[in-house]
Length: 171
Image (cartoon, rainbow, N blue to C red):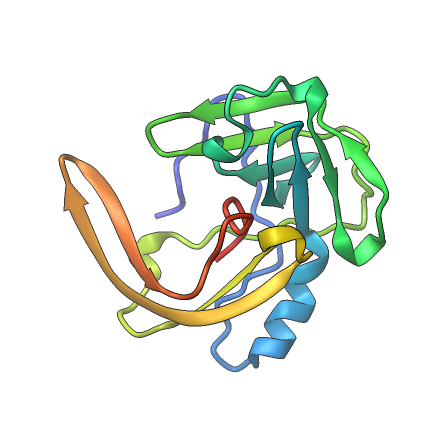
C-alpha cells in the first residue's frame, strides 16, 4: 500500500528510487547525491533531502525550535549557494520529522522516493548520505538489521556508521 498522505504536504511519487538491486553503490549515490542538502541553523548543521516540489525532509532534532527564517540549505553538488527556508510545512516531534518548504529550489532537482519500511529485508544494504562534521554529502554503507516495536512506536535498526550531521539525510 502507498504511504498515507500527510496533511499540508502534497503527495508525490518521485522517479528516483534507491532500491534497485542491480545498481552499484556508486550509481545509486550518483542519482541521489544532487537531491541531498546540508541544513544550516544558527546553532547546528544537519542533512536533508528533497521529497517533493519545494519540499525538504529532515529530522526535527536537527532544527530544534529554530524559526524557518533562520534556516538555510545548501546542495553540496551545486556549490555554496544558499536557499532560504520559507516555512515549516509539517512537524512531528514523536517521529522526529519535519518537512520544510523552500520556494526557490531549482526545478531540476529530483525528489527522492521514500521506501516504506515494510519493503526492507534483514541484511539489505543501506546507503547513508549526509554532512557529518562539516563534510558535505559524505557516504557510508551498512546493512538493515531489524524492525522492533516498543510502546507502539516502530524502530528500525541499521548497522551503518553515522555521526552528528548525518541526521536528516536519506538512508
